[in-house]
Length: 140
Image: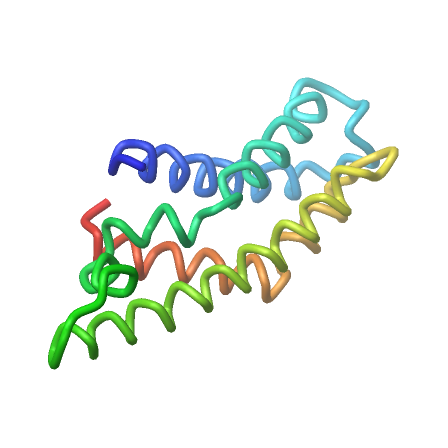
């Protein structure tokens, strides 16, 4: 996976979250009302798709991440262990977030209140923090 591919995933996550913040503020009873109602499912889908294999996408670009799969010694092993631990956290947070995104998308109507609750989820917030920290380390 190229760095540009990773950037595209991060952008999909950030754009989705920003859209969700705006959608939550609209007070819509369901996604049948207005243009943003039509868009919410696309953002839910794009956000979820960006999470598929996200930890692996970071692995190749994270300092110590390649050593985590290729082996190493001394400082390289320490960096690899730290990278692998962080990637495991990202994987867990991404899977928890995907479960919530799928649940919301499966509803007959996606209200602003439902999206507001999704935004407030500790899993989504943890995921965003993971992505911001790891993104900073890989320079995106």
